[in-house]
Image (cartoon, rainbow, N blue to C red; front, side):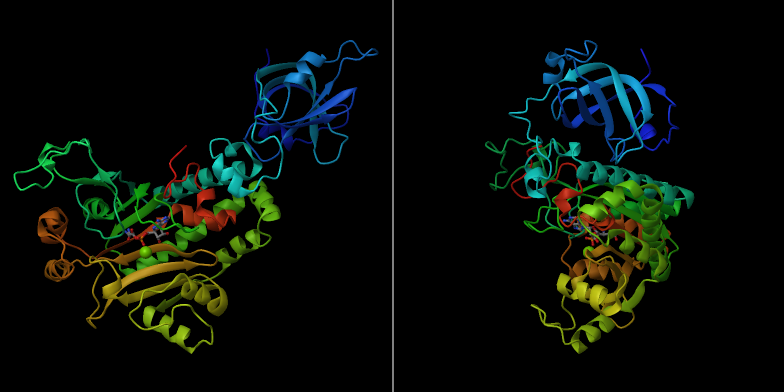
Length: 472
Ligand code: 4AD
Ligand code: MG
């Protein structure tokens, strides 16, 4: 028995005419076509976007050595095969090599009547309904390989710069970040809740003895790490229960949050820009086959947009400047622009796509529209927040320099009506050896929208979670 090899290692080989190799490949049938003498089977094992052409001679009156009708009936789109044979230079168009099958074992059949991916060219909407099978399409193969490569490039970027990967908790007892609505975590029986004498729910009977939630962000715990290890990053799932049915929001999404002691806002912006350029460069260097497929199928400007980002200095402007630009523009917005409002995605996209024509970092937002922990500016009105805005996406990164002054932070916490009892551990970083520090959060799926050219965030995560959807 030959050792099996990945299709990726074969498809780009260029064999001389007459040169052969005995190989064994395993994968799923994408298509089968042919005539009464021969079948051509496109076999894909997910290691690359290309399928390997398997040539199977059929049993006929003239050729008793061919594969039997009985076997060939089992080989339909979706079936899983193990093929041993001889790899040769292909004379056909569209592939370097093909395999002349000597032995075919059918691992698993797929009934053509019921296999949902029988035909090619399904809509992304339809594929979302069969998210359990869509990894078997070329599109999702490309997206999922890119997703993996971006996760790898992310870890590599931080590792090479001396950051420590800090695992922050998913279940949290604090709900003070205010980044979004939270999911509750409880082992109490919903039908039979324990009550206090006052009639409220008795959380002392719950698993943790208090109300707990799924985290919206690892930042607050990340800050504890940065105040000891200098530079940390988190990377994990975060949860937001907003009922926002948009192409850019998920209820469960992955966030990467670096947090750095001794970084001011400028250092934070430099890191974010460097980071995004590193990730796009990695995709261009290592994922060109997948990018080309997505470029051709979905977005003819994908590759040029990725290249463009690498060359550009991101524009850096303050919120006040952004408001001035938007007001001076003749563009019609659904939401008229006023200083103090949260910028809507139509405003962000105008700045990035129409006005500056490159990524934009906006800083110094009004304090009332940003989180309590952002460092307050001397003007008393703005804070050192920063959002990185990307073409097609809008906000891809949100971050800030953090308020390191205990008194100022405490005042802001009171203004925001955040209960002190939830914050004592966070405030301890400011009580004991406080330091200037900064950080940001990258929405990993927003990054993937940019890198894959997909337009719906549900298509860049294997198993999307959104309102009314948690089937697979
Ligand atoms: O701007 P956000 O809410 O910032 C934070 O959570 C901070 N704690 C980050 C930090 O400073 N450490 O979220 C950060 C990013 C956004 O820029 C966006 O890319 C993404 O997370 N994001 C979402 N992605 C998908 N679905 C959602 N519902 C998202 N909400 C935010
Ligand atoms: Mg934000």
